Image 1 (tube, rainbow, N blue to C red):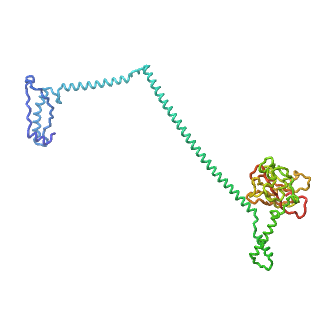
Image 2 (image 1 turned 45 degrees about the vertical axis):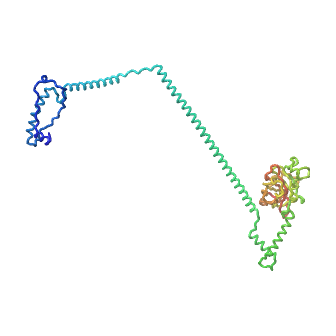
Image 3 (image 1 turned 180 degrees about the vertical axis):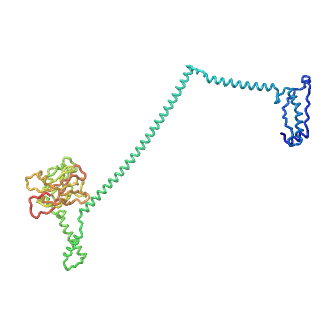
Amino acid sequence: MASPSISDAAVASPVTPVALDPSPVASRPPAATAPVRKRPVLLLDQRPHPSTPTSRTAAAAAAAAAAPLSQARRKRGLSSSGRPRWQTALSVAAKNAALLAVLLYLGDQAWRWAHPAPLAQPDDAALAGYTARVNDVEASLARAFGALKVQLEAVDRKIDGEVGAARGELAALLEEKRLAIEGQLNLLDARTDELNDALGGLRRMEFLRKDQFEAFLDEFKESLGSNSGTEVDLDQVRALAREIVMREIEKHAADGVGRVDYAVGPAGGRVVRYSEAYDAGKRGGLLSALPFGGGDNGDQSQKILQPSFGEPGQCFPLKGSSGFVEIQLRKGIIPEAITLEHVSKDVAYDMSTAPKDCRLSGWYQGTHTETPQNHAAEMYALTEFTYDLAKNNIQTFDITAPDVGVVNMVRLDFTSNHGSSALTCIYRIRVHGHEPVTPVIASPLP
């Protein structure tokens, strides 16, 4: 349906129908130029809108104008689309041919899929070439794997070398640390031993107790007389101290320790048995020049019971680092202490020959006909001690055995010395004690 503007235009200027030539086509004169192909004309619906009063008149006029035009087209053989019939036929034939070609192609593909062609057998040359290529690839892979293996082995060796070096450095560091720690532990052990020795020395020191001091003070006041009163003058203390010191000097001047020695040789003590003596004459050197070094100078064992002046070499040497000496006392006593003397370290040639760990035993020998083996069961230990080179060269050790009876035989055993493996030197042995109140013939075992 046309818009109102178009309908108005159609009413304002009505279309004049085209007059067609009724004469036949053959009778027409030939055209000077080629006939121009007419484009199909789109005919608009020029019917008036039903709302307009002139719609019916315009529709009738349009129908009257279109009727002669359709008749002319039918006379010229044109189709409804405005093209010649031969063009339409040709288009249909082309489309059918294209469809047939597509159908043939699809049929051929279906036939090929249903009946595949047999595989062509490769010839010997192609197979040989393929085999050669495969061999080349395998050789290349083998060479690559070989090179990779060599590189891995080199990397392994390098890693092993670095790990070994690191392990060696770590072991050396650990060993160094271990040695340092061991040195510190040894130093700590040495200090511990020194502390133990110091504590032992403190234990052996006789400190004056309070009651003893008070008794000494009372005795001191009594010695001053009753007119002195309770006050003590400083000069009086000095005088008493001088008197005590003089008495001690006199006592030590007698034998060096101020105690009776019941093993001294001139009073009746004697060495009855000892371990193997050291023969310095067979070795020569410095020891052979000492008094005990060579020649027959009598029984050298009696030197250990004689007073000495601390001369180096005036001793009785025993072979090895261990041995013993048995001494008969001048009479039966109740032993209280033993004194072991060595040369002073200020004048000694070698302090390694001094005895170290010692043990003193005793028993009572009734008759001279009894052998030492008969008294092996009667012997009992009196004390054990260690000779310390850091202290005075004359050291006294108390008897520690309880309930000690009367003895007239003692035996000193030393199990070690201070470093010498060849010999051990004994300068002097003293045995201290007191005589029993009543004389006894034998002493019961503790």
